[in-house]
Each structure stands twice: as C-alpha cells, then as structure tokens.
Amino acid sequence: MFSGEGVWREGHAAGDSGRMEAANLSLADSDGPDLLSPGPEMIRLLIAHGDNLSRAGLWALLEAEPDIAVAGSAGDGEEVITRAREILPDVLLLDAALPGIDGVEVTRQIVSDPDLSQVGVVMLGDSDEDDQILSALRAGATGFLPRDTEPGALVHGLRAVAAGDAALSPSVVRRVISEFASWPDPGLPGPEQLDELTPREREVMGLVAGGLSNGEIAEHLVISRATAKTHVSRAIYKLQARNRAQLVTLAYETGLVLPRQPALAGAGAPPATLAVA
Image (cartoon, rainbow, N blue to C red; front, top):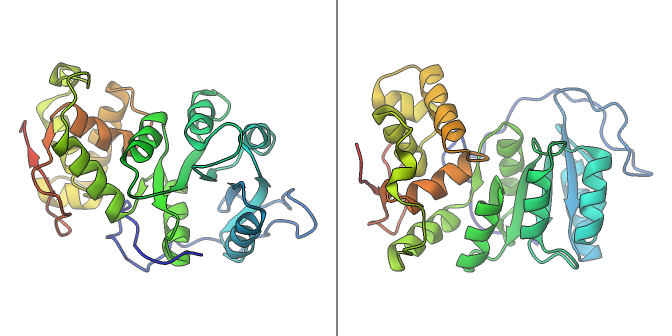
C-alpha cells in the first residue's frame, strides 16, 4: 500500500528512521474504537478513508505502534467530523478523496472548530496534484503525504505532527516550490503582510520555509534552540497561521522566499533564496 519517500519534520532530516520515545501504554480496544486509558504519552489517532480495505489496513498498521492508540475511524466526510468531535484525537489521518465532504473541506471545518483546533491533520493525497497540496495546506493541514508513502515514513510523520511539527514529504515540498516559481499569482498576499514581523522573525520564517528544524535554525543563527522556537511561534502568531506548514506556504506566497531552486537542499541550508534578510 505504501512505498516511497521520507518525511520532512522537526528535528529529523528526510528519511531519518529515528522515532520519538514514548511509554508503552494501553492501545485501542480491539473490539471497538473506544480507548482503554491511553495515557498522556499516547497519540490518539482518528483514521478517515473511503475505502474499507485501506481503512482496515491503516488501522492494523498503526495500532501496532507502541505510542499510537487508534481511537476510531470514519468512511466519509460527514462521519469524520462527527467522530472527531466525539473522540477529540491528537491527529487525524485522512484521505483527500473522502466521499461526501472532501478532505480539504473536512480539514477546514476541523481546524476552524474551537473544540478541535488542536487536532493535527495529516492528509494522504496525490503528490503531483499541486492544487490539492496547496488547498490542503491553506485549509490548515499540518502534513501532506503521498498515498504511496512507506509505512515507516507514515508513522514518522504522524509522530511529527503529534509533536507539533510539520510532516511534508520531499516531493510535496518540491511541488510547493515549483508551483510558486511557475505561476506567480497577483492575488496572493503581498510582502506588506509581513510588516508585523521583526527582521529576525522574517529570517527565521525563511529558514523554516527552507526545511530547517528549530535546532538547525539555532545552529545557523548562533542562537539557542529555545530562542529559535520562540521566533517561530511569534511568526505563526503574528501572521495568524494555523501551524508551521502554513508558515512555509506564506513564506512563498508573500515573496519572502524566492523559489529559484526546484530541488531540496541538504540539511542545514535553505533550498530557496531569501528575498528579505
């Protein structure tokens, strides 16, 4: 079902096989979706997919992980919104092509609901569909992974989103960069949207768009990791971005970062040119 690429995430380079440490606590009840006191370190996961076999396969794959508790599943857009309100998951894994309300609209409704605003949304879709990728990120998805992502990378991405980071495959990042490079849209936000940011916050935002983790930003700017994290958080707050993934999108939309290089750079160096220092 899954094969392919690594995940771009906080604290790990693409393809890193490392995993977060988590307590081996109770998993989901095998007789139903309700949890058996999963504990604070468990990731409460809701799976949404229109295909019964794929949904069952994802459930079997992910509930085997020691730090993931599959709290439930849904087969269409209306059901996933209802289930999310019942379960209050940490992460929602959904297919973009859900029956009924599609994945992008589900994402928009989830993140705009005050009771669900802390749910991290990871969408599975087509990595060559630029409109789908950008729509998902603008709607508030924290991650977008191709449907052919290998199981280990999928689990890695879910952990990243549960930890508050973004989960974007290298191919998705390349598509975002090439998209903004190929058709500048006069309707996109202008650089004046960044006026509230300090010069340092703009610089940090550009480095986030380059795929750098907080640790790599700290090393690049010779500041502490805590300071780097603060700059990222302030940029997200001032721009009213929902998450780190939207901050990346805004960096390209506003022209803060010029997508001149179509491929990802290596760790520690941004893959595009900063328009503003």
